[in-house]
Length: 393
Image (cartoon, rainbow, N blue to C red; front, side):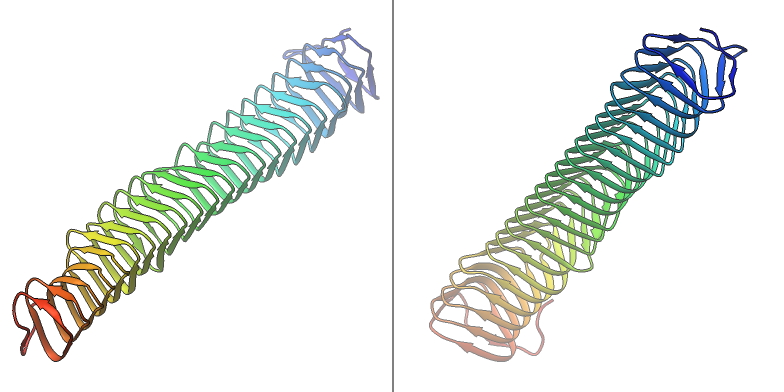
Protein backbone atom coordinates (compact mmCIF):
# COMPACT_ATOMS: atom_id res chain seq x y z
CA UNK A 1 0.00 0.00 0.00
CA UNK A 2 1.09 3.55 -0.73
CA UNK A 3 0.37 6.08 2.03
CA UNK A 4 0.93 9.77 2.55
CA UNK A 5 -0.42 11.24 5.82
CA UNK A 6 -2.33 9.17 8.40
CA UNK A 7 -4.28 11.29 10.88
CA UNK A 8 -4.77 8.48 13.43
CA UNK A 9 -2.93 5.26 14.34
CA UNK A 10 -1.72 2.87 11.65
CA UNK A 11 -1.98 -0.92 11.91
CA UNK A 12 0.17 -2.92 9.49
CA UNK A 13 -0.52 -6.65 9.10
CA UNK A 14 2.07 -9.38 8.62
CA UNK A 15 4.23 -9.49 5.49
CA UNK A 16 3.17 -6.01 4.36
CA UNK A 17 5.07 -3.52 2.19
CA UNK A 18 4.40 0.17 2.77
CA UNK A 19 5.43 2.91 0.36
CA UNK A 20 5.22 6.67 0.81
CA UNK A 21 4.74 9.70 -1.38
CA UNK A 22 6.87 12.70 -2.21
CA UNK A 23 10.59 13.04 -2.58
CA UNK A 24 12.04 11.58 -0.53
CA UNK A 25 9.25 9.02 -0.15
CA UNK A 26 7.71 9.52 3.31
CA UNK A 27 4.80 8.28 5.41
CA UNK A 28 3.65 10.57 8.25
CA UNK A 29 1.49 9.11 11.03
CA UNK A 30 -0.12 11.30 13.68
CA UNK A 31 -0.45 8.46 16.19
CA UNK A 32 1.18 5.05 16.75
CA UNK A 33 2.29 2.59 14.09
CA UNK A 34 1.55 -1.05 15.02
CA UNK A 35 3.40 -3.68 12.96
CA UNK A 36 2.44 -7.36 13.26
CA UNK A 37 5.79 -8.50 11.82
CA UNK A 38 7.84 -9.20 8.70
CA UNK A 39 6.93 -5.75 7.40
CA UNK A 40 8.95 -3.43 5.18
CA UNK A 41 8.67 0.34 4.85
CA UNK A 42 10.18 1.34 1.50
CA UNK A 43 10.23 4.96 2.64
CA UNK A 44 10.91 7.32 5.52
CA UNK A 45 8.60 6.90 8.49
CA UNK A 46 7.48 9.59 10.94
CA UNK A 47 5.14 8.78 13.85
CA UNK A 48 4.40 9.41 17.52
CA UNK A 49 5.24 5.80 18.52
CA UNK A 50 6.32 2.58 16.80
CA UNK A 51 5.36 -0.85 18.17
CA UNK A 52 6.46 -4.00 16.34
CA UNK A 53 6.47 -7.78 16.55
CA UNK A 54 8.89 -10.07 14.72
CA UNK A 55 11.18 -8.40 12.16
CA UNK A 56 10.46 -4.94 10.71
CA UNK A 57 12.65 -3.10 8.17
CA UNK A 58 12.67 0.65 7.53
CA UNK A 59 14.54 1.41 4.30
CA UNK A 60 14.61 5.15 4.91
CA UNK A 61 14.91 7.30 8.04
CA UNK A 62 12.90 6.61 11.18
CA UNK A 63 11.70 9.64 13.15
CA UNK A 64 9.65 8.74 16.24
CA UNK A 65 8.60 11.58 18.48
CA UNK A 66 8.20 9.39 21.56
CA UNK A 67 8.85 5.64 21.89
CA UNK A 68 9.95 2.64 19.82
CA UNK A 69 9.02 -0.77 21.22
CA UNK A 70 9.88 -4.08 19.48
CA UNK A 71 8.69 -7.16 21.37
CA UNK A 72 10.14 -9.96 19.21
CA UNK A 73 12.51 -10.25 16.29
CA UNK A 74 14.66 -7.37 15.15
CA UNK A 75 14.28 -3.82 13.93
CA UNK A 76 16.40 -2.79 10.93
CA UNK A 77 16.70 0.87 9.89
CA UNK A 78 18.72 1.88 6.82
CA UNK A 79 18.59 5.61 7.57
CA UNK A 80 18.90 7.86 10.61
CA UNK A 81 16.89 6.93 13.70
CA UNK A 82 15.48 9.41 16.22
CA UNK A 83 13.33 8.69 19.30
CA UNK A 84 13.08 9.53 22.98
CA UNK A 85 12.97 5.94 24.16
CA UNK A 86 13.87 2.72 22.32
CA UNK A 87 13.09 -0.73 23.73
CA UNK A 88 13.98 -3.69 21.48
CA UNK A 89 13.81 -7.24 22.76
CA UNK A 90 16.11 -9.01 20.29
CA UNK A 91 18.27 -6.86 17.97
CA UNK A 92 18.47 -3.33 16.58
CA UNK A 93 20.45 -2.50 13.41
CA UNK A 94 20.87 1.14 12.29
CA UNK A 95 22.85 1.99 9.15
CA UNK A 96 23.26 5.69 9.92
CA UNK A 97 23.04 7.93 13.01
CA UNK A 98 21.14 7.11 16.22
CA UNK A 99 19.78 9.87 18.46
CA UNK A 100 17.75 9.03 21.57
CA UNK A 101 17.46 9.56 25.29
CA UNK A 102 17.23 5.91 26.38
CA UNK A 103 18.06 2.73 24.43
CA UNK A 104 17.40 -0.76 25.82
CA UNK A 105 18.21 -3.79 23.64
CA UNK A 106 18.00 -7.35 24.92
CA UNK A 107 20.36 -8.91 22.41
CA UNK A 108 22.48 -7.06 19.86
CA UNK A 109 22.79 -3.36 19.00
CA UNK A 110 24.67 -2.21 15.91
CA UNK A 111 25.01 1.38 14.67
CA UNK A 112 27.03 2.25 11.56
CA UNK A 113 26.76 6.04 12.02
CA UNK A 114 27.22 8.25 15.07
CA UNK A 115 25.44 7.48 18.33
CA UNK A 116 24.21 10.23 20.63
CA UNK A 117 22.20 9.07 23.66
CA UNK A 118 21.89 9.58 27.39
CA UNK A 119 21.87 5.89 28.34
CA UNK A 120 22.30 2.55 26.53
CA UNK A 121 21.61 -0.85 28.07
CA UNK A 122 22.37 -3.94 25.98
CA UNK A 123 22.11 -7.50 27.19
CA UNK A 124 24.41 -9.02 24.58
CA UNK A 125 26.73 -7.01 22.36
CA UNK A 126 27.04 -3.43 21.09
CA UNK A 127 28.95 -2.52 17.91
CA UNK A 128 29.32 1.09 16.72
CA UNK A 129 31.32 2.32 13.73
CA UNK A 130 30.82 6.06 14.28
CA UNK A 131 31.46 8.31 17.25
CA UNK A 132 29.57 7.53 20.46
CA UNK A 133 28.42 10.16 22.96
CA UNK A 134 26.59 8.91 26.04
CA UNK A 135 26.15 9.43 29.74
CA UNK A 136 25.87 5.73 30.67
CA UNK A 137 26.53 2.55 28.68
CA UNK A 138 25.83 -0.86 30.25
CA UNK A 139 26.59 -3.95 28.13
CA UNK A 140 26.32 -7.50 29.43
CA UNK A 141 28.57 -9.11 26.83
CA UNK A 142 30.94 -7.26 24.50
CA UNK A 143 31.38 -3.73 23.19
CA UNK A 144 33.28 -2.53 20.11
CA UNK A 145 33.41 1.14 19.06
CA UNK A 146 35.54 1.92 16.01
CA UNK A 147 35.60 5.72 16.47
CA UNK A 148 36.23 8.05 19.40
CA UNK A 149 33.93 8.14 22.42
CA UNK A 150 32.66 10.60 25.01
CA UNK A 151 31.17 8.57 27.85
CA UNK A 152 30.63 9.34 31.53
CA UNK A 153 30.24 5.74 32.71
CA UNK A 154 31.01 2.50 30.83
CA UNK A 155 30.04 -0.86 32.36
CA UNK A 156 30.75 -4.02 30.32
CA UNK A 157 30.54 -7.59 31.57
CA UNK A 158 32.89 -9.14 29.01
CA UNK A 159 35.21 -7.30 26.62
CA UNK A 160 35.32 -3.66 25.50
CA UNK A 161 37.28 -1.97 22.73
CA UNK A 162 37.18 1.72 21.76
CA UNK A 163 39.18 4.03 19.52
CA UNK A 164 40.21 6.71 22.00
CA UNK A 165 38.32 9.70 23.32
CA UNK A 166 37.16 10.34 26.87
CA UNK A 167 35.57 8.00 29.42
CA UNK A 168 35.22 9.07 33.02
CA UNK A 169 34.55 5.70 34.70
CA UNK A 170 35.36 2.32 33.13
CA UNK A 171 34.16 -0.94 34.75
CA UNK A 172 34.82 -4.06 32.65
CA UNK A 173 34.76 -7.66 33.81
CA UNK A 174 37.08 -9.11 31.17
CA UNK A 175 39.33 -6.94 29.01
CA UNK A 176 39.41 -3.31 27.88
CA UNK A 177 41.37 -1.84 24.96
CA UNK A 178 41.74 1.59 23.38
CA UNK A 179 43.37 1.89 19.95
CA UNK A 180 43.91 5.68 20.24
CA UNK A 181 44.76 8.08 23.09
CA UNK A 182 42.21 7.88 25.90
CA UNK A 183 41.43 10.28 28.72
CA UNK A 184 39.89 8.65 31.78
CA UNK A 185 39.23 9.12 35.47
CA UNK A 186 38.94 5.57 36.78
CA UNK A 187 39.59 2.16 35.19
CA UNK A 188 38.42 -0.98 37.03
CA UNK A 189 38.97 -4.13 34.95
CA UNK A 190 39.06 -7.74 36.08
CA UNK A 191 41.34 -9.07 33.35
CA UNK A 192 43.55 -7.07 31.00
CA UNK A 193 43.84 -3.44 29.83
CA UNK A 194 45.67 -2.11 26.76
CA UNK A 195 45.95 1.61 26.10
CA UNK A 196 47.47 3.63 23.27
CA UNK A 197 50.26 6.20 23.37
CA UNK A 198 49.61 9.57 25.08
CA UNK A 199 46.75 8.24 27.20
CA UNK A 200 46.18 9.98 30.52
CA UNK A 201 43.90 9.56 33.49
CA UNK A 202 43.59 9.12 37.19
CA UNK A 203 43.26 5.66 38.78
CA UNK A 204 43.84 2.20 37.30
CA UNK A 205 42.73 -1.01 39.09
CA UNK A 206 43.35 -4.17 37.05
CA UNK A 207 43.25 -7.77 38.21
CA UNK A 208 45.51 -9.19 35.48
CA UNK A 209 47.79 -7.17 33.22
CA UNK A 210 48.03 -3.52 32.16
CA UNK A 211 49.83 -2.48 28.98
CA UNK A 212 50.42 0.95 27.41
CA UNK A 213 51.92 1.27 23.92
CA UNK A 214 53.69 4.58 24.53
CA UNK A 215 53.55 7.27 27.20
CA UNK A 216 51.08 7.47 30.11
CA UNK A 217 50.02 10.09 32.67
CA UNK A 218 48.11 8.69 35.65
CA UNK A 219 47.24 8.93 39.31
CA UNK A 220 47.54 5.52 40.99
CA UNK A 221 48.00 2.11 39.37
CA UNK A 222 47.02 -1.08 41.25
CA UNK A 223 47.57 -4.25 39.20
CA UNK A 224 47.57 -7.84 40.36
CA UNK A 225 49.83 -9.20 37.63
CA UNK A 226 51.99 -7.28 35.18
CA UNK A 227 52.44 -3.66 34.05
CA UNK A 228 54.19 -2.89 30.76
CA UNK A 229 54.65 0.67 29.43
CA UNK A 230 56.68 0.98 26.23
CA UNK A 231 57.22 4.74 26.65
CA UNK A 232 57.61 6.92 29.75
CA UNK A 233 55.16 7.20 32.63
CA UNK A 234 54.37 9.87 35.20
CA UNK A 235 51.96 9.59 38.10
CA UNK A 236 51.44 9.29 41.84
CA UNK A 237 51.98 5.63 42.72
CA UNK A 238 52.22 2.06 41.42
CA UNK A 239 51.32 -1.09 43.37
CA UNK A 240 51.86 -4.30 41.39
CA UNK A 241 51.83 -7.87 42.58
CA UNK A 242 53.99 -9.22 39.76
CA UNK A 243 56.26 -7.19 37.49
CA UNK A 244 56.63 -3.64 36.16
CA UNK A 245 58.38 -2.82 32.90
CA UNK A 246 58.82 0.79 31.71
CA UNK A 247 61.01 1.30 28.65
CA UNK A 248 61.41 5.04 29.19
CA UNK A 249 61.53 6.98 32.45
CA UNK A 250 59.23 6.54 35.45
CA UNK A 251 58.36 9.55 37.63
CA UNK A 252 56.23 9.08 40.75
CA UNK A 253 55.37 11.53 43.49
CA UNK A 254 54.41 8.60 45.72
CA UNK A 255 55.43 4.93 46.04
CA UNK A 256 56.59 2.22 43.64
CA UNK A 257 55.63 -1.07 45.29
CA UNK A 258 56.30 -4.26 43.33
CA UNK A 259 56.07 -7.83 44.55
CA UNK A 260 58.35 -9.26 41.89
CA UNK A 261 60.53 -7.36 39.44
CA UNK A 262 60.68 -3.71 38.31
CA UNK A 263 62.61 -2.74 35.17
CA UNK A 264 62.95 0.90 34.02
CA UNK A 265 64.92 1.71 30.87
CA UNK A 266 65.87 5.22 31.98
CA UNK A 267 65.70 6.90 35.38
CA UNK A 268 63.15 6.15 38.08
CA UNK A 269 62.11 9.04 40.33
CA UNK A 270 59.84 8.30 43.29
CA UNK A 271 58.96 9.19 46.85
CA UNK A 272 59.50 5.60 47.98
CA UNK A 273 60.46 2.26 46.37
CA UNK A 274 59.65 -1.16 47.80
CA UNK A 275 60.49 -4.14 45.59
CA UNK A 276 60.34 -7.75 46.70
CA UNK A 277 62.56 -9.12 43.96
CA UNK A 278 64.66 -7.16 41.47
CA UNK A 279 64.94 -3.48 40.56
CA UNK A 280 66.71 -2.48 37.34
CA UNK A 281 67.07 1.14 36.16
CA UNK A 282 69.61 3.49 34.61
CA UNK A 283 69.48 5.40 37.88
CA UNK A 284 67.11 5.82 40.84
CA UNK A 285 66.41 9.09 42.66
CA UNK A 286 64.13 8.46 45.61
CA UNK A 287 63.08 11.00 48.20
CA UNK A 288 62.47 8.85 51.29
CA UNK A 289 63.20 5.14 51.12
CA UNK A 290 64.44 2.26 48.97
CA UNK A 291 63.85 -1.30 50.18
CA UNK A 292 64.62 -4.21 47.86
CA UNK A 293 64.56 -7.86 48.84
CA UNK A 294 66.53 -9.33 45.95
CA UNK A 295 68.82 -7.14 43.87
CA UNK A 296 69.25 -3.62 42.49
CA UNK A 297 71.10 -2.96 39.24
CA UNK A 298 71.76 0.62 38.09
CA UNK A 299 74.34 2.25 35.87
CA UNK A 300 74.49 5.58 37.71
CA UNK A 301 73.38 4.43 41.14
CA UNK A 302 70.69 5.06 43.75
CA UNK A 303 70.18 8.31 45.64
CA UNK A 304 67.78 8.35 48.61
CA UNK A 305 67.38 9.07 52.33
CA UNK A 306 67.14 5.48 53.57
CA UNK A 307 68.44 2.44 51.66
CA UNK A 308 68.17 -1.25 52.55
CA UNK A 309 69.01 -4.38 50.58
CA UNK A 310 67.77 -7.68 51.98
CA UNK A 311 69.65 -10.80 52.99
CA UNK A 312 71.85 -12.22 50.22
CA UNK A 313 70.80 -9.37 47.98
CA UNK A 314 73.00 -7.71 45.37
CA UNK A 315 73.54 -4.06 44.46
CA UNK A 316 75.18 -2.95 41.22
CA UNK A 317 75.97 0.75 41.02
CA UNK A 318 76.82 3.27 43.74
CA UNK A 319 74.54 3.97 46.73
CA UNK A 320 74.10 7.50 48.11
CA UNK A 321 71.86 7.84 51.17
CA UNK A 322 71.53 9.32 54.62
CA UNK A 323 71.28 5.80 56.04
CA UNK A 324 72.35 2.53 54.36
CA UNK A 325 71.76 -1.04 55.51
CA UNK A 326 73.36 -3.90 53.61
CA UNK A 327 71.72 -7.17 54.69
CA UNK A 328 73.39 -10.37 55.81
CA UNK A 329 75.56 -11.91 53.11
CA UNK A 330 74.45 -9.22 50.66
CA UNK A 331 76.79 -7.61 48.13
CA UNK A 332 77.20 -3.94 47.23
CA UNK A 333 79.63 -1.77 45.35
CA UNK A 334 80.53 1.77 46.51
CA UNK A 335 78.46 3.16 49.40
CA UNK A 336 78.15 6.83 50.40
CA UNK A 337 76.16 7.67 53.54
CA UNK A 338 75.96 9.44 56.88
CA UNK A 339 75.08 6.20 58.68
CA UNK A 340 76.18 2.88 57.14
CA UNK A 341 75.58 -0.64 58.47
CA UNK A 342 77.04 -3.78 56.94
CA UNK A 343 75.36 -6.80 58.50
CA UNK A 344 77.11 -10.12 59.11
CA UNK A 345 78.81 -11.53 56.03
CA UNK A 346 78.09 -8.53 53.78
CA UNK A 347 80.42 -7.44 50.98
CA UNK A 348 81.22 -3.92 49.74
CA UNK A 349 83.76 -2.50 47.37
CA UNK A 350 84.17 0.93 49.05
CA UNK A 351 82.56 2.46 52.13
CA UNK A 352 82.45 6.25 52.61
CA UNK A 353 80.45 7.40 55.64
CA UNK A 354 80.22 9.57 58.71
CA UNK A 355 79.33 6.79 61.14
CA UNK A 356 80.05 3.21 59.98
CA UNK A 357 79.19 -0.11 61.62
CA UNK A 358 80.56 -3.35 60.21
CA UNK A 359 79.43 -6.66 61.69
CA UNK A 360 81.56 -9.84 61.75
CA UNK A 361 82.75 -11.69 58.64
CA UNK A 362 82.17 -8.80 56.25
CA UNK A 363 84.52 -8.12 53.35
CA UNK A 364 85.56 -4.75 51.89
CA UNK A 365 87.75 -4.82 48.79
CA UNK A 366 88.59 -1.13 48.59
CA UNK A 367 88.54 1.78 51.04
CA UNK A 368 86.75 2.48 54.31
CA UNK A 369 86.77 6.23 54.96
CA UNK A 370 84.78 7.81 57.79
CA UNK A 371 84.53 11.21 59.45
CA UNK A 372 82.77 10.32 62.69
CA UNK A 373 82.77 6.91 64.38
CA UNK A 374 83.72 3.44 63.14
CA UNK A 375 82.51 0.28 64.87
CA UNK A 376 83.94 -2.82 63.32
CA UNK A 377 84.05 -6.52 64.25
CA UNK A 378 86.27 -9.16 62.69
CA UNK A 379 86.31 -8.26 59.01
CA UNK A 380 88.34 -8.93 55.89
CA UNK A 381 89.79 -5.65 54.61
CA UNK A 382 91.99 -4.86 51.63
CA UNK A 383 93.13 -1.60 53.30
CA UNK A 384 92.97 -0.36 56.87
CA UNK A 385 90.12 2.10 57.61
CA UNK A 386 90.97 5.78 57.72
CA UNK A 387 89.33 8.66 59.51
CA UNK A 388 89.25 11.75 57.27
CA UNK A 389 87.99 15.29 57.41
CA UNK A 390 85.98 15.10 54.19
CA UNK A 391 84.56 12.25 52.19
CA UNK A 392 84.75 11.81 48.41
CA UNK A 393 81.53 12.57 46.52
